[in-house]
Image (cartoon, rainbow, N blue to C red):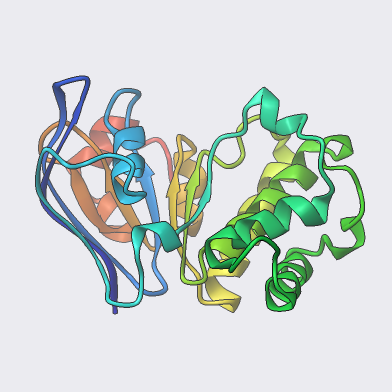
Length: 235
């Protein structure tokens, strides 16, 4: 089942065209990695998917069971986010705000937040202050928050930035587990092509024109891959 359908889309940034005639499809269960050089339009595409920016032309549609506001989103962390003065449970629970009715979170909201914390093995951190956690723990908390917001699809923007290699590998494995074991569709923006080739089912390589979209194996045989890597990176 198609969750996101992008057809002949044009994207602009500050009135300058950054992506032209872009088409791709994200189906249920896919793990799509979005790659490309700086300035290739990755952040602009994220904003378009989230409904924060309109396309200059073309069609960006969602499947009948999903809306732009129902996509779980894990942005790059800012310094302010890392120092956020709230408990782990409060941060995760805030991901349910789209389903909150009235002033207070419901029992169902709280149970769902705890369920997602258990999935990511952070329920023991429930009452800890978020800003006292390690970088890897903070990312797990934010990932649990994103799961509360998006039951079917997660959009991750450079999720391992600033993490050490060991924690980075653990986090990539966790994302793959979410994709395989829990059936959550993943769209991840990354500069780590090695990781993308190791985990993704599909690759979207953004360029201003003639962007590549296809399976991981198709990408590794493409001109886009060869020009980007010189054929030096293998899964």
